[in-house]
Image (tube, rainbow, N blue to C red; front, side):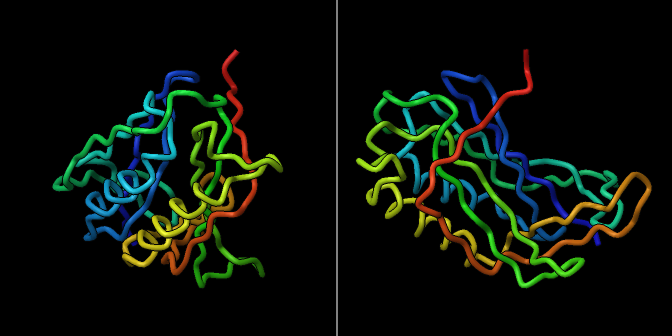
Length: 185
């Protein structure tokens, strides 16, 4: 089955450019819902961050992972974060996306990293603060509830055709700090 690949680009002050990749069923446009999600969380992310939600992208075959075409017709958007500009680069929170899928005896899940977050987004124990969780959690739940996202389980290896996609049925934001590392040297 074909699916849309929606790469949302992050522009940040430290660390440069990043990307959060989302997948949707082929005929489903989730660009408005993605822009709504980033608008909902922008107060907890430093003002040096912008997100670019594209209105075009690749069509990917879920079984093989090969690009089979392009999709056009989404509603492109640029969302600018509005949080305080004091932050720790590369650290923040993450969303856990749940599906009903099971592959090889394991549940299919996904993650979206939300890094960086503002310095007041942490609590005295060094974990994610309740105010930030109160913003991120409902935003993720609303996006999951749209019924428009998929988690893609990649094929088992080069040339394999056992990839699969699974509808997102829920989301949570754990009270845990995460960090991103760069492979650049």
